[in-house]
Length: 145
Image: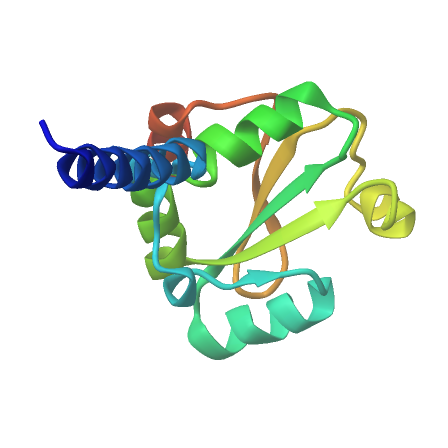
């Protein structure tokens, strides 16, 4: 093999190696966890969510959690990121995330003693359901009815 072909082959292999390395270090999001963000809006303001629920006639899905809570992190990464869960929430609920550490008054108002806790409110803001602890995507979908 002549010198020019060796360099051409070396350049081709080096370029391919760089492409493969870049591809290998890219973060991956499993297909089952991807969603279109515009479909599900997460509220952080309780009163704003209640007003929207009253306007739309939808129930409110509130999840109380904390950054230091392993079960909350699992609920967030495995359950609330699931496409079917997000579809159900977007279609039928006004979704609210509440951090118990930054919203102690709201946590007290709803008697949150452990996290994660999911509370369902009717469009008027009356509690109609509560579940404490981690739920898998299937468990949450079943709970939502």
